[in-house]
Length: 239
Image (cartoon, rainbow, N blue to C red; front, side):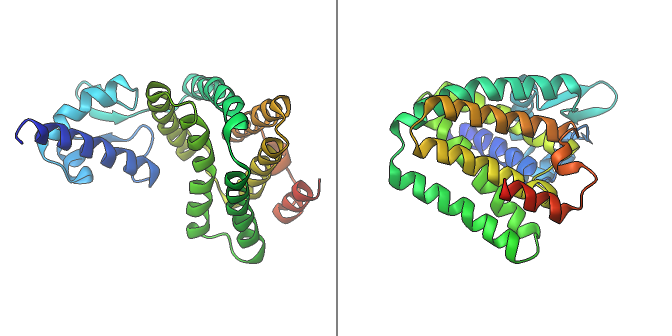
């Protein structure tokens, strides 16, 4: 029993840190002390000290002399590298996914996306909707990756996903302005899956990842241009 407890504490501490990123309770570049990290994660000092080397190895945290612990700082290099890795892993996953996903699964995934779209069109795009939309968004990507059946790839992808989440916190989020375009990109990808067309799947996925990359760089003129938000979103869905 004693041999299992430290492992369990380390795993719980890591999961708690992951949730702090997902819930935007920590910010890129933020400095925290070990004691503050203890309080944030609700973990004992020993577990936090054992967690730090793992977070440093994954590029999510670094120790700065005289300053303390710093959450990963977002810069252009991190952005480009994270999205490049995401593109490589997801392309292989999508090409596998199109071969094995059932029609019933695709219908359920499509319904979840259409529900988000319907809610966004019929009422205010509030925090609850954005949270649900983010879950649906990342849920599809995680499902594709796990279809590869490779635990090392899944682990690498999820670590990279945390980097992307930090980038989103710094540069952009699945906000009201980008929710509908992002959902439409997913629906286009789902349609390619339904057609069982690998070439089209690769094309739609590449477009989606490129668009997400450009959004965090502030270069998605279709969404961030001068047109009023309502007009921009309507044009995306009518195209």
